[in-house]
Length: 313
Image (cartoon, rainbow, N blue to C red):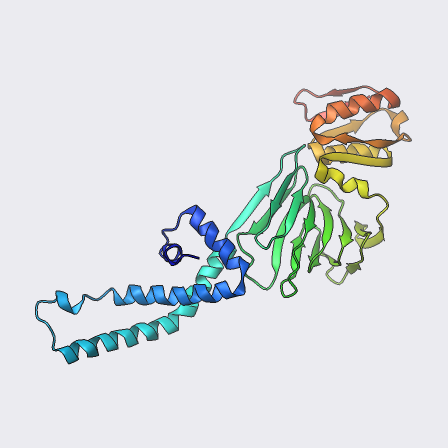
């Protein structure tokens, strides 16, 4: 990292791009934190020593030995103050970076892919919101999720990765897993593809489950329940697909509600026992999916005036 950029950062004059560059550089290596500490000390020393006028600018010049003594005393004072304050400033800068939070929100019918500061890859499903720090500076890498996300976590044995949701927390070291936890739904589900995760109920912290690969855990009636993953196609939402196999109509409509952010009211009682399989492109929209399904299920549908509700008749 260029010293000029660091000094501008210390002085509060760095641009947004320069602050981002410092954040990425700081997160990339523990040695960079130590270098930041050293450069902060040097920067503070320059500021303090520059606050006194140079001897040559004074009206009467000092004898040589007095000038040397003055400079020695000044340097010693700067060093003492820097040692006393350096750690504070260093930790203060680290804390400022770590406290800066980013929020990403995905609209209905869309999805997003991003890389977190530690290199973790995340896919966010429709109607999902995730908050994460500009840099993971503490003993844990913590993010907050409202919605559904698929994580490929970068392994860091000394810094567990924690996903906090409205209902449960998920803690991992390095793995691939899917979390579904919309705050406006009673459902919670974590599905593990690789590695291991520990899931804990926020209301009952003693209720924890250590999940093994190809298994999922759900919150049912206040208890965490595990089972094997029967269909991996459901996670193809990352590819922009809604996939379903032998799913009853009501469950499929709930899936549509989550994806498109619209309420669906089923008034046709003949659809209670209707079971279907297939897949739709999310980008084609809910009306297209309903038109295809109605060819076999025999129903009609209409929206209310503000188009916030779909009635299946």
